Structure formats: structure tokens, C-alpha cells
Length: 135
Image 1: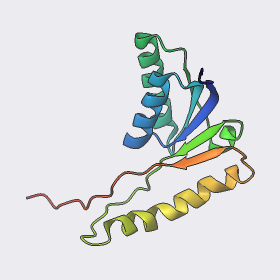
Image 2: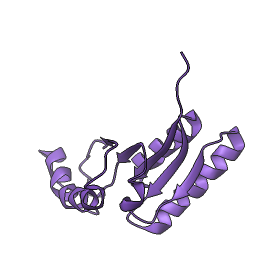
Image 3: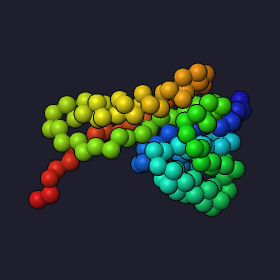
Image 4: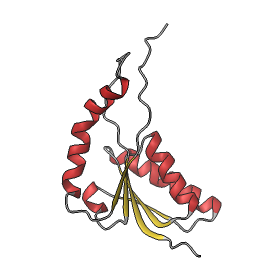
């Protein structure tokens, strides 16, 4: 059986998780294009540049595209949501809940432009670690 290549896959968030997801999608050749959106256009454009460079080096046909906002992802077959709110997690207990509370408004704001989206949405997060004060 031959796997069918997806069309476009959107990635929201260009931090560590978004970078990893984008690199896996581009290197794996699972889609025709990866569309990247981030809180700052600078980080999204930087990730797109990195993905383009990587695709050229490894001979991947996947195209990396900077999308101005989540609304430009509605034609994607799937959207991977992996943003992180700007906050310092100082909780020593319920570490994940602090991340949830900080990220909830960010996720709500991203959901509005995708309200009528019919494709697959995958939320990817990383473990929230309390930052230790410098010694």
C-alpha cells in the first residue's frame, strides 16, 4: 500500500516544539507544504528559512511557507498547535496547571480564526518545568 502525501499542514508556534514538528514534517516528506504561524512574524520567518535550507540540503520537495495568521491555515489538511505564552513558571507543584492557565487565552485567541476549520487539529505541548533561581 502506498501512503498518500498530505497537501498543506499548518504549524502554529515557532518555538522549540514548533521547530521540531516543522523539521519532522519537512524531513519526512509527509506533506507538500508546511505553513508556519507564530506570535512574532520574525520567529515564523526564521523557522521557514531553516526549513527551506534543510529541505534543500536533504533533497526534500516539501515547501515551507510563512503564513501571516491562523486564518490562513483553514485550507490545510491538518494544523499542529504548539504555542507557548510568555510567562515564567515558578510553581513547584501543579507545574502543568500553571502552563495551562497561562496558555488558555492564547489558545482561545487562536481558535477564533479557525472556528469553521474542518481539518484535523493536533495540540502538542512540552513538559512545563519550574525555573530554578540562579545559584
